[in-house]
Image (cartoon, rainbow, N blue to C red; front, side, top):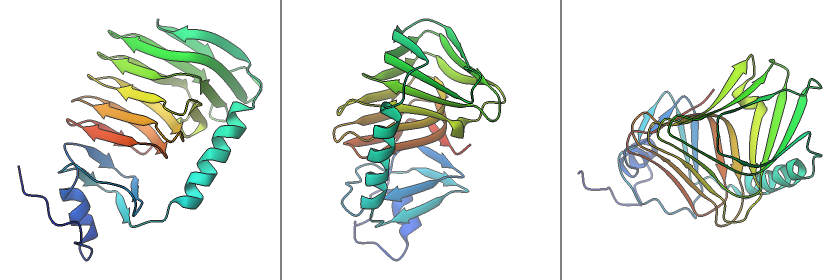
Length: 212
């Protein structure tokens, strides 16, 4: 593998960022890097996207915490314990569907489908973790837009793992200080956004995060 450039290479910021990540893919989105962040890996591919390095994200973190708190305070219209099997959740018909669930854990091709129109919004408040593996999916049906679907992780040390060819659409918000995102393996795709103030965001092994 190539030798990583020194961390003080500031004049060619996009090249430095590209050379300091590993095996990931960002398409047509924006990668923001706080000056306090530790970058450990190499070779991310950035196509049609933007890199903003040394960005003070303190105001953004405050906004994320506030958005998470506001979402968690919404009254649920649907409640689940765990979602481990194929399921279809329809819009409640009033443009806002609020789902309260303990955890989402799908594997071996199981699918969670969220169905709604272009003006519908979903808020999925998750008390524990989310894990998709082995070609499982969270997909949107009808005209529901990824930007109108929020997965809000309430746990301080929430784990969001999407692996082994799985895919998901939506905005994934995990502002806990010990939260971890792991988006990994060929064929794994997230259409939407990852918002974290926690310990780790790992995008590797040819996984993709694509702006909707």
